[in-house]
Amino acid sequence: MANWFECKVRYDKLQENGAVKKVTEPYLVDALSFTEAEARITEEQTPFISGEFSVSAVKRTKIAEIFFDAGDRWYLVKVGFITIDEKTAAEKRSASLILVQASNFKEALEHFEKGMQGSAADYEIISIAETPLMDVYTMKVME
Image (tube, rainbow, N blue to C red; front, top):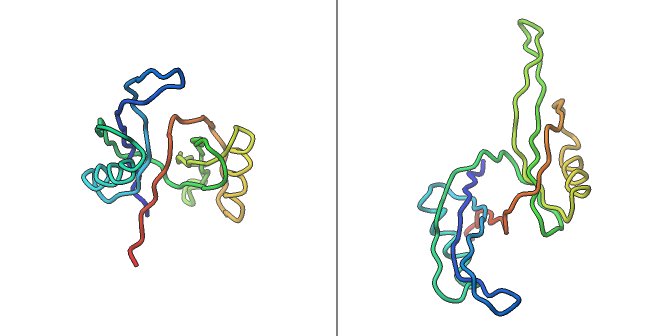
């Protein structure tokens, strides 16, 4: 199971008008620890950022799964899974967060539903919201 960490990278970004502005951008990294997450985001961002940058924050997320697809945006889908307690026959709901890659809201919903096909669990979508995430870096498998 993946451990997803949100890492915020702070650096000077060249704007379209030629001005330089200090920005902080969030990224998602699959890592085993906070230390590894910081090292991974530093390694991943070094080729793309000219000049100095710093990792200003690293925090663990509660994302259960990610549905990768085409698209340049990331949407967070909050899902309520419905289970029935066998002893009391009462419905129990447990929330999960699933990240979906898509170009727009409609695609995010479609990609989520496609990703859930074949799932035996009953669920309802609680919310779908676009995130500020710039990119997601999965665990690298060493060969």
